[in-house]
Image 1: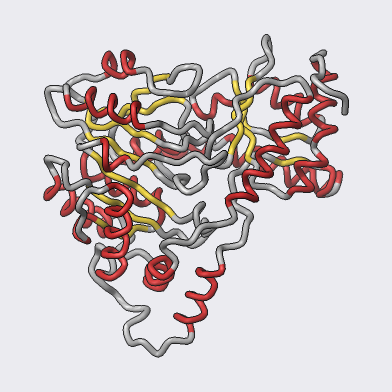
Image 2: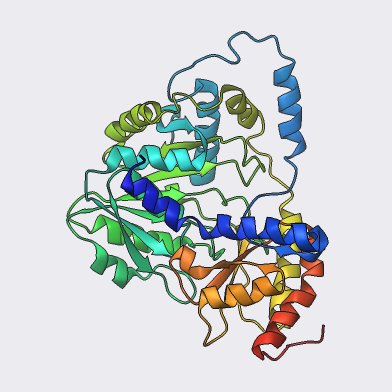
Length: 396
């Protein structure tokens, strides 16, 4: 018999995965070209040439120990390269000791939370946020304290200050944000650092950064290392190099963190005892050789624009995201998220209710889908608008 805790989680499930499965069901009935599935953020671009070249080179290499164990924190050469890049970006001096290679950002975050949390410690999550944060915190007997952001999805510092208690251990930030695409500028990071530093005990800032290379309209993501002292970065190449299935990432502890030495040692230990032992050996070398490469960001920006135009032309309301892979559109007034999602599904248009990201009144759509899916979905958005009596901004 399985544990009651896991049984409950199975029953509740994931709204994203449920919509994904619904998409598969509808495609079997109506055909792939007639179902418009924006439910899951699965990067569909091919990895950059540098990645493919590195794979070929390594596979054909006679280098000894290429597939063997290494230090639990990862290969020294890979960690040194990452530290060098982050130092170049932030101006903060970083050594390889700050870096621990992990099995993606999810593993990185679990390593960090396992290291810092005692039972019933609290972690502030700024809504909307990636729903797995709740599971990650719960994995290590912590409690999520959900603090809503403002209408622009920026932190509400008064609300954060009120949410801090003696049990507060960390704040999780995610910029560019999943699901809103919002980017925190320098002033936001400086203010957050002031709020965290004014607490009467150490509060960690965990920066979840899988989307920092996916930004649009000529914008950029400020280096959090430059502005936040009590910082622990969790990074993944799932999005920037389009490697979601390879599970490769890292943690990086800021040298300005007062608990630097203990955190570095604790994360390395947690990485081992949580079952990772090592991040995949060959992929450490691949990302080392591809460290400055990126996927075709312009392609994502183009598709973002197509999907945004479909949404607003049909009469719906949303902010145009500055980064990441999602549009967080407002649910039409008077409709619950789930009800609206069900109406959309009747038109073969699949999206995820905002409730799944702890922000009701919205629905998330991933634009990392084929261009043809986005183009052909236009009629579905107009059909949904007609179904609920919404006036179009332009003609179909």
